[in-house]
Amino acid sequence: MNLEYQAMRAFADSWGLLMMFAFFVATVLWLFRPGAKKSSDDAARIPFKED
Image (cartoon, rainbow, N blue to C red):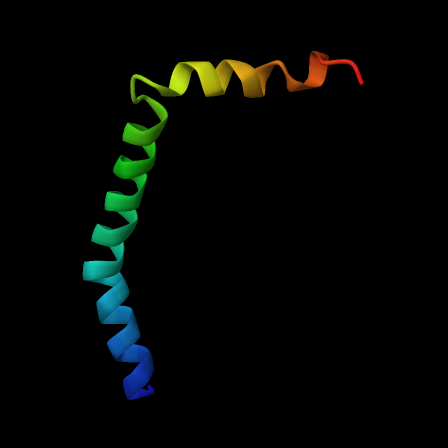
C-alpha cells in the first residue's frame, strides 16, 4: 500500500477521532449555553412568520 495512505490512516485512527470528538463536544456546549434559548426560539418560529 501507499505510504501516504498509511500515514493518513494512522492520523485518522488517533488524532482525527479526537478532533471529531472535541468538535462534537464544543457544538453541544455551544447549543446548550445560557444565551442560546432566545436564538433557538426565534429560529423555531421562522416557518410560522408571515411575509
